[in-house]
Amino acid sequence: MKAQIQANLIIQEQIDQQEIDKKLEKESSQLHHYYSNLKSSIDGFEFSTLDTWNIGDSENTVVRGSEAIYKLFQEYICSYHGAESDLKSNPKITELLSMLEICDKLLELIKNSNVPERETLWTLTSHQFTYRIFPRLHDEYPDKIDTYFCESCNIDHGFPKRISSLIKSIYDKINNGL
Image (cartoon, rainbow, N blue to C red; front, side):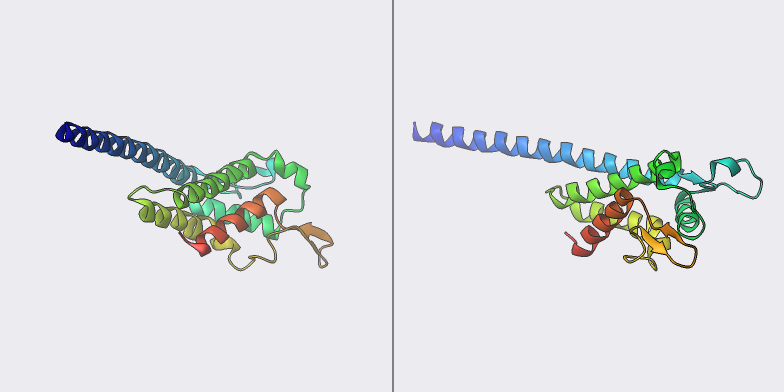
C-alpha cells in the first residue's frame, strides 16, 4: 500500500510538472508573438510627413523602419506646429502609439514571466526601443518630451501626454532592468 501511495505521488508530481511546462510554453509563445509584432511594426513603419496636405509632394521621401520613426520625431519636435487634436487622429501618430503600447506591455509581461528565454526577450525588446525608437529622443529626454511652451516660436512643443508617458514608462522599465 505504501508503495502505491508513493507511486501515485510521483505520478501527480509528473502531471503537475507537465501542467507547469505547458503553461510556460504557452506564455513563451505569447511573448514571442508580442515581440514579433513589435519588430514587424517597426520594420514596416513608413513615414514621409505629418502634414497630410503634403503627403504626395516629391520632396517628402517615404522612409521605413527606425529611420521613419526618427524622421517622425524629428519633424514633430522641430517643425510641426499643428494642434495636438490633429495628431490624435493622424494614422502615423496612432501607429507609433500602438508600437509604444506593445513595447511597454511586452516589457511588463517579460518582467513578470518565468519563461526560460526571459533575459533574451528582455534584451531584444530593450534593443528595439533603445536603438530603433529612442535615438532621436535621446537628447530631448526627459525635459522636452512633455508638452512645454517654446518662447522662441510662441507655441507648444512636446508630445501628447499618452505618447510621452509611454516613452517614460518604457525608458524606466529598461533602466530598472529585470
